[in-house]
Amino acid sequence: MRLDVQDLQTFYYRSALGRAAQRAVRNQMQAFWPEAKGQTVVGYGFATPLLRPYLETARRVIGLMPAPQGVMAWPKGQPNVSVLCEEALWPIDNGAIDKLVMMHGIEVSETPDALLAEAYRTLGPGGAVLFAVPNRAGLWSRSDATPFGFGRPYTVGQLELQLRTHGFVIERHAGVLFQPPSPKRFWLKTGRAWEGLGRSIPLGVAGGVLMVEAVKQVPAPRRPGLGQRVKKPLGVLEGLGVPEPSRRT
Image (cartoon, rainbow, N blue to C red):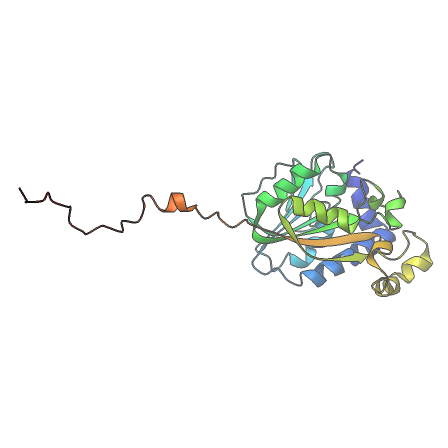
């Protein structure tokens, strides 16, 4: 099940819990990617809350939002960079993306393999992609009070296996959202402390959201076989004269 863009907008921009979640995920993204100067940065799903730090220095920032979800104008008060697109048919050239962020994308997709194939197509060689997905073992995937309670939650191993199958190389991963998915004042006030404490807890049982970074691996071109490279055998006897008939009678 996929949430509507209005529900996502309400959660991330109009609720204290949503703003706390946005801050925790964005901080971890910036720890992985502190800058993107001169690069093309794209967010897919509902990743626009994470992209603001790159607006001024990146060459281009684009927010792709799938048609079943809907689209909203973003960023507020600036020229719009959001685009409505088909899930596996993005209006982006081959190899044009340097950095790609997916949030509320793969876990709610009906065709995740096609989505990953499109991500691979549009990333440049060595381009990086960062996934923010609900942790199967975390509390956030068990609560439908947040967008991370919808779709298919993952373990680190499940997501990494799926990415390797589509030609990605895993770089690193982290857990975020260690505070309970509760709007109560106590949990919101102590959220930063929970994020600091959570980094010392095993990843698989702690964070409500898993963040996995991978890079596009381009297969090395195949070297032609010996039969293709050598069109004819080596002429060992080349240069020797052709034998003549004997002159003996």
